[in-house]
Length: 128
Image 1 (tube, rainbow, N blue to C red):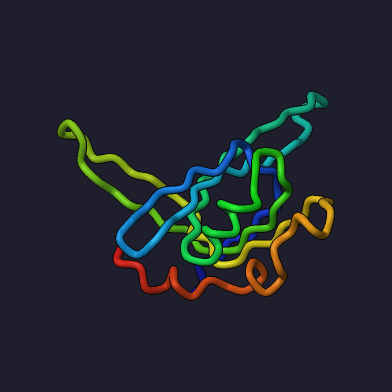
Image 2: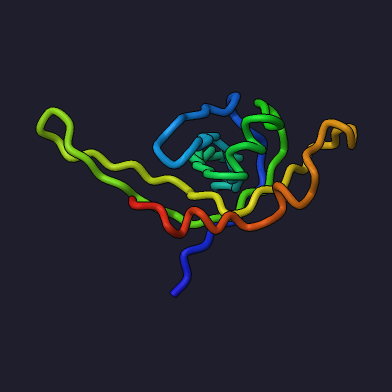
């Protein structure tokens, strides 16, 4: 069985950093666009993806990622549910395991390659 997602796109907003029992997590959003022709008319759809990164990857996001940066994120899809006001709610997120910064920045502003280019094994052992 395979649950795998690979995205390359720009960050839609500055990252959100959240403290939790095991450390920090980072939330970022990426938007992918789909363009097609429908009876000669150009159509476009934007899909927003909610990405969650833990451990070393969260630290890299916290220290180096900002709105507009071009990123590659590899990970898995995970849907969680909860109840609020008597209604069942759902959230689908991508749990990031690999992060690569693709923006053309000066070398001095990039983290060392071994920090952000290594799969994040911590996400496989999360309690949710």
